[in-house]
Image (cartoon, rainbow, N blue to C red; front, side, top):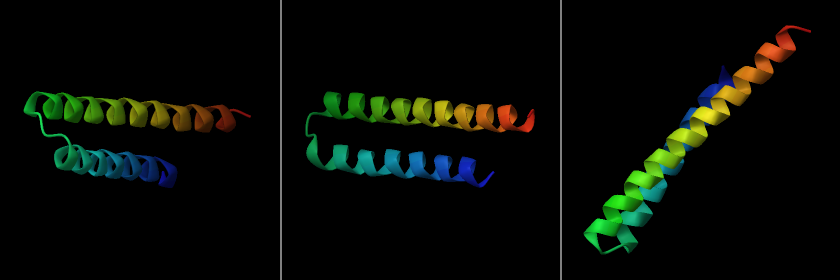
Length: 64
């Protein structure tokens, strides 16, 4: 449970941090919008894959 919470908060923090960097340094509105969407999409996908991996390890170890 703690590892899952760490993953969630870590990717949430990364998404917000990257969004601030994009908003500060990208000046074209179209590129800014595209990068923010890609940032949130990639952090969501990577977070979900990480949570699935933790769940997979937990279920595999529970069976032994």
